[in-house]
Image (tube, rainbow, N blue to C red; front, side, top):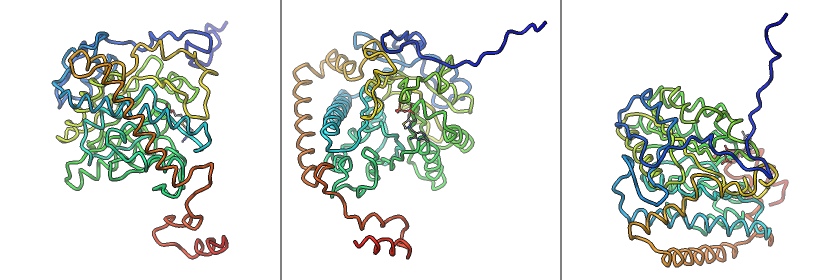
Length: 410
Ligand SMILES: Cc1ncc(C[n+]2csc(CCOP(=O)(O)OP(=O)(O)O)c2C)c(N)n1
């Protein structure tokens, strides 16, 4: 007699599928103000409890509570609000432009606007961010030209990347925004190398690495953590856990009954798990991690808990794999609504100002779009010259590429 029942393969499933309601209790939330703030030189092992709790500052009434509630200049919060609003308005406008076939593809960051914008405001412009395709809020917080961004999206004659890259794969070196690559996770390990270089040169710049929950399953994630730990690289390792990787739930990337922050501790890296929809918490945690890196105290890993409110991309229909009203039940809410509530509570914002700033930003995005479209859209065929396709493959064009260019007759 065999005393063991037959083994069964465990395949994680989300609780909510179309037509159902998600049970978000798996998030294990803490109340605002409940999670402690450790010393900057904390040992990685002593952050284990911070990887299961959730650092939150804003409560349900928009009050800032607890040890992570810093004395933030309201001016900075207003700047953050503008960056978030601008991101959301830009995204929505570009989704429409994609539907109008002016561009081939787009990816919005609906619901995740606080993370990139608050961290960008907590860093120096010369610190290099290694983003994924969902951190356009960094570009907004750093006031990058909307016209140039839209020209990239349209792959037109003014596209700074000469039409070579899929829309949204921006590259803005002067704004500390590293060239985006389509290959998931590659930037995570490159960020660590950049941070190591900064340390080797005796510089004071730090790197900010970005990855999604799904992409943590890539080997580059693990390589990055090992190198960051071994060489005490001045880097912030940001994991944006928006619960979804296209149609796959975060549990199947390894988030079931464990947190992505916990991975950092296992690799000897001080780690935090933070409410990614709480602008004040994102800013405070980013400042803490940046300060550690700048003081030579080593890397930090931060898991940002958020929700991908929109489709994965313009090629995706999330109603096929998750409840259509899922975001409205997500317990961490909407980052813009939450900062708005706080700013109004402290007397530095109002509904009228919210409406006025939104209208102003709508007009700014629209004007930028009009200007960018003068240089061509997908629909009217004004694209960079085919001859430029052969440039920049190598520093100097080799003979075989010259011959190919001649064969094309351009
Ligand atoms: C190496 C690699 N594998 C697969 C893909 C296809 N792909 C693009 S985005 C994506 C999901 C990524 O999800 P996540 O890391 O959670 O980030 P999110 O899109 O949610 O921001 C996949 C599988 C890719 N671009 N690169």
